[in-house]
Length: 89
Length: 196
Image (cartoon, rainbow over all chains, first blue to last red):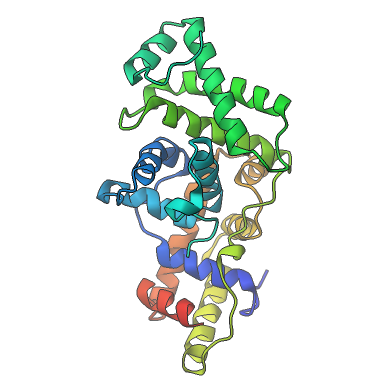
């Protein structure tokens, strides 16, 4: 199946490819690290280097980003108040 | 027993490992409360769903206790699993809108200066999708872009979600190599997308 170069999916894919690295977390690996990321956000601290892979995964994976938003709500945090939304602005 | 906010990680872990029913019940109670907050105001789960999700999550948490890294509060980690369990069920049952990657991309008119380069990038990418990916990689990557939930896709392909992620990661790396051969690195792609 050939894709037309005007297909809107190509632009989304190009954005994902720009973020692609050899080392990435899987969704399960993210699951065991996202709690510390949430606690960092709750404290209004800047995520340290060890959370860089978490942030990268969250830019690439909309489902994990959606879960991050739900987790923040579960923790009583308004996602917007810590700069988190469904889109990666 | 009701959960106390000051239970420390060790108390949770030891209580659950020892199979103390009051600790498991306290965990389920905290999960129900958190899931209720998470989904408040949405059209998703009902109270009976929340009860099911909390029970399933408690089982998953007990299975994954050894994966707890101890670098966060136990309950935050446990709640992340509760959310994963709930969202997976909702996605499988098509009770939440797909998390589309396309929504993350604002549409706007291209500037004249970058239009040709932008069009070339997308043409290279389209070509690489046809020529460099296996049919399975192509199907998987495009389905994800269309917002097909990973749980649905993994079940359709008969693979574990982690294997699915590896498959699409390998596909993205192939495409990245292809556009780099054409002279586009990550920074130039970001620049073009920002201008376009």
